[in-house]
Figure 1 (cartoon, one colour):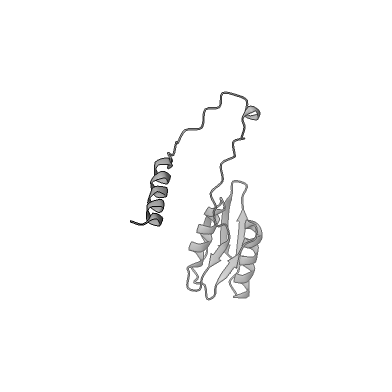
Figure 2 (spheres, helix red, strand yellow):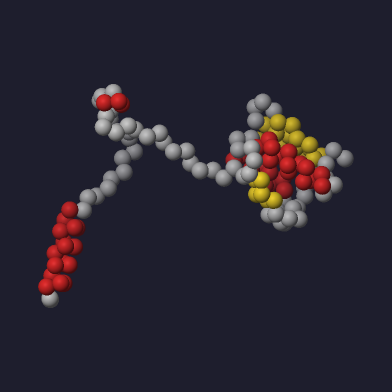
Length: 130
């Protein structure tokens, strides 16, 4: 073994001897002092990222995409209309009520008159007017 290999092997051995094992602890760190006295402040837990935009692909059953999208936004949908398949892709990233209004407008352009009612308890009723 030459000198370069010997130094490299010794460096690897030293690094592995100093390596720390990371342990995940499910409990919170016990804080015995006021949070302002700590050298670091606890960070708030990050909210999981949830895709809240409405995404309908050509060929999708529209009611299924609407129900799924509403659930991700905290709403429950009652679909009281015929079933329709999308003929084109549609992606809307506005607030729930604005995106719902744009969706209903796009259905009207296709001669399908859907209307929606959003209730105070986050229930949404979508129905067809013939």
